[in-house]
Each structure stands twice: as C-alpha cells, then as structure tokens.
Image (cartoon, rainbow, N blue to C red; front, side, top):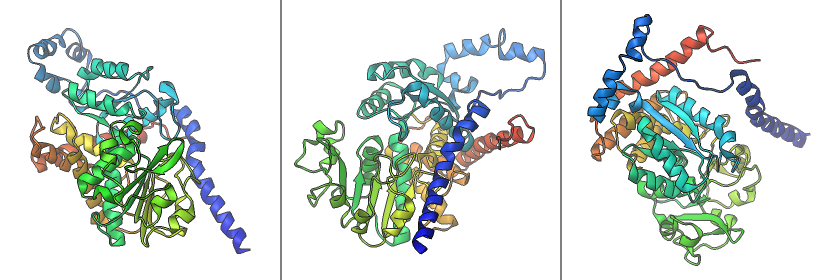
Amino acid sequence: MAERETKGHEDERVRRAAAPGEKAPRMHAFYRGKIEASVKCAITGFDDLSIWYTPGVAAPCKEIAADPAKLRDYTNVANAVAVVSDGSRVLGLGNIGARASLPVMEGKALLFKYLGGVGAFPIVLDTQDENEIVQAVRWIAPGFGGINLEDIATPKCFPILDRLRAELDIPVWHDDQQGTAAVTLAGLFNALDVVGKRLDGVTIALLGIGAAGAATLRVLIAAGVPPGHVRVVDMVDGKTAVLGSSHDLERLFPYRGELLGKTNRDGVRGSTPEALSGADVVIAFTKPGPDTIHKDWIRAMRPRGIGFFMANPVPEIWPWDASEAGLAVVGTGRGDFPNQINNSLGFPGIFRGTLDVCATTITDEMAIAAARAIAQTAVDRGLREDSILPTMMETDTFINQAVAVGLKAIEQGIARRPLTADELRAEAENRICHAQQETLILQREGLIPPPPP
C-alpha cells in the first residue's frame, strides 16, 4: 500500500513538471508571441509627428553625424540589446534552427524588459556559419547598446564571442557562458553556507564542458575554487570520461584545453560515477533526464552534498530523487521546482548595470560581483535548504546586481558614464519599475487580455 502511495505521489510530481510544456503552445498562440515595440515619447497631436519624424528628425540626425556620442542622448540605443541566435543549440532541444528558436529569443527579450527594464529585440540568423554570424552582428551593432549571444553551439560560440568583443565598442555577452556561470556561483555561495562548507575546501564534479560548463569552471576558479579540486566529465571517443592529463585536451575541447589541464589534481579516472564518488558538489550541464544521473552515484558523494542539475527542459535527475539519495541542497534550472538556478536571475540586472554606466564590455569580475549581489539578496531574507536564491519576482535582486555590476565596471576603468551607487540604484529602480508598472497598467486596462483558461 505504501509503495503504491509513493509511486502515485511521484507520478503526480512528474505530471506537474510536464504542465508548463503542455500549456505553452496554447498560450503562445493566444498572444501570438510575447513582445512588441511600444512608444515611449508623448504624442499630443499631429504637430508632434513632425518633431518625431520628418522634418524635425533631420536636426538630431545632423548632430549625430557631426558628433556620434550624441547617439546615446537622442535615441534609445543606450537601452537597446540585440538577442542574437542561430538556433544551433537551443535549451535542451539541440539544433532546431533559427525559426524554431524564435519563441526562446522572444522570451529572453520579455525577461530583459520586465526584470531589467532593458529594451531587447530578438534577432535570429538564417546561417550557422561562424564568419557570417560575426559579420551579421557587426552590421547591426550601431543600433544597439549591447549584444546578447544566445543558444549558439560549441565550439564556435567561443571564437564568435572573442572576435566580436575585440571588434565592437559595446558589450558583447554570451549568456549561456557568463550568465549561467554567475547564477551558478551565486547558488553555490549560499548552498555552501547552508551546509557549512567552504568554497576553497570542496571537491566539485562538473559534468559537461560546453559553453555553460567552461564558463562556470573559469568563474568558479576566479572566485576562489582551486582548479585541482574540480573533476570535469565529458565525452571522449563516444564515452563519458573524467578528463585528465592522459587526454589531448585542447584537441578534444578547443579553447578550453589549458584550463582543463589544471583540473583533477587527484588524477581520478573513470566516468561520472567515479567523478561523483567522494565529491561535495555536482554541477551538471548534460543531457535532459530524468535518468541521466542515477541515485547510486549520488549516494557515493560526501555527506551534506550539493547538486545543481541544469539540463532543460527536464533535469538530469528529478530533484526529489536527488534528495532521497542524500543531497542536502538540490537546484535545477526550472522555476516550478525549489532552488531555480537559471541565468534569468542574472542577465537582466547585469545588463542593467552595464548599460547604465555605458561599459565597453562585461568582465568575469562583473559577473562575480553580480553573483555576490544575487547571493546577498537571498541571505538578507533568510536561507533554507530549499531556498538558496531569490526568485525572478524579487525585484531587488536585479536592482542590487545593477549597482554591483556598475560599480565594478567603474572600478575596472571600463565605464564611460561613471555614477555613484545611489545614482545607479535610482536609475535601475526607475527603469525596472517603469517596465513592470507599464505591464500591470496594460493588463488592468485590458490592453493585454488575461490568459485563456
């Protein structure tokens, strides 16, 4: 009888986990997308149109031609971000192409606006060629204050990011890299606090060294994790393996070999079970589950362990199974489970602070500053094993990040518009609250209809 009740309870949890995907097509069809352009200037009558367009608009155009710096004063460019994807590695769906990736990019733009007050525009490219992607972004860059690269497959995502950063004078960021790394680090700060362990004293099994895994490894090390304490697992010759000195790392994992060579101090060999044995933390960026990681592997970890299972749309193991196997803190990328560790907690606030000081790039140090701000926001309202991070609906999370990121950019000498902490906070509060109030007003007035039953 008890076994049937347990099975029924698990089946119900699985059904609830499937609900968002079941509702999404109907909701998307009802609204025909999630974002649209809106007007931000006053229009009081016909004469105003002659100011905002011809003939009046010629005057600011001529001033910008004479002094390009006025572009930020006379247009929305300073608060505009392009969300660029070729659809080659979308969520857990793989290479679904540009058109099929558009709902994700629209969703990204929605979060930019609602959570960060950033005007973001989805741009999907009908090419998966590295050089063509770089050229396309070069061509559109003058109309934006920042570029967010999204869901571009490895290894080409690494040179695309590096090349665009070198060639453009606006911040270019690959959210699957630094964004994921920042939020993962924030979660780890607080999870370690909850279980009473130190960042420099734990052994970490990092499963997957793609874009998210590579950036997370780099940022963890920059934040204080000894590289030798990390065991990295990925595919070698068609099989999962703990990476080490016996592998030709740069050939197998271009742009990551040097960093990987510093890991696995103890020379652990084998596969995922061996990487998890005796580890304190497992961070997984692998294939969707729920049976990618098994309970028995987790049982071999040290007591009071931590597990972040980041595959989408289904984590590598159901969180309740990971808890039953002995983990004290479990996080996933999903908002319908406790402890959502999702880059959506990071990029809106990080870009808010970056744009407000007109920074020329987004450094790992800025990402770490954001991670500390996210973590502290959760600490201020109290930590629990099932609540190590704030949620996306806690606006202070993004305001606090904007302040921390802006100040770090100023400290690093890459800000073209230095502001005080108070000025940064006021700017972020104004932008974010405006975006959220605008949405609420449109809903209240019926201009955004309620969702279908």
